Image (cartoon, rainbow, N blue to C red; front, top):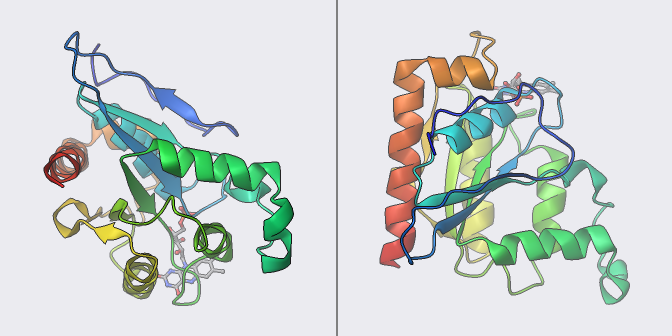
Length: 202
Ligand SMILES: Cc1cc2nc3c(=O)[nH]c(=O)nc-3n(C[C@H](O)[C@H](O)[C@H](O)COP(=O)(O)O)c2cc1C
């Protein structure tokens, strides 16, 4: 299967799965992509969609689509966990590693993303999970620093060599446009390959 498959402009509400088969008996590396933006034309979501297109055939990548459906985190709800939270946990458990791409709001992490991470704090799924942070804006340094601190505190395993900043700000590129941009697409390919190698080496 070609890795340059067409990319839909809008993310679907549910996960998008790009299944890849190598014909070999080895398992693909499984990566869950999480965008911190709920915007229909999110540059961070587009970056992750393009990363899915850039993934080699040895990688299976899914885009998590449930961020906006999660209830506000409340420890009181944990004993009777909402099904959408169980679904989030299942997605994270499925993955060998997570790629998070998030905008910065008021020098911080968007509430919807922090909310999802808060739901994961008390579980086992996140512990030791390799994490790469993508950034669609050269300016968004505070949110990236905060995210690094948060996921490290949650015992995620940061993979700095797979964490990239793409110069998308002001370009108004959708996923197909990013795939067509040789420089950014090459950056994505290198990052995903680097992340998969790091995961396999752990
Ligand atoms: C409420 C709000 C606050 C923002 N605050 C910041 C900020 O502090 N620093 C920054 O670099 N960009 C800030 N931005 C710009 C967004 O981070 C930027 O537009 C980003 O590309 C949006 O990502 P998305 O296209 O994935 O939704 C802010 C945008 C909004 C709507």
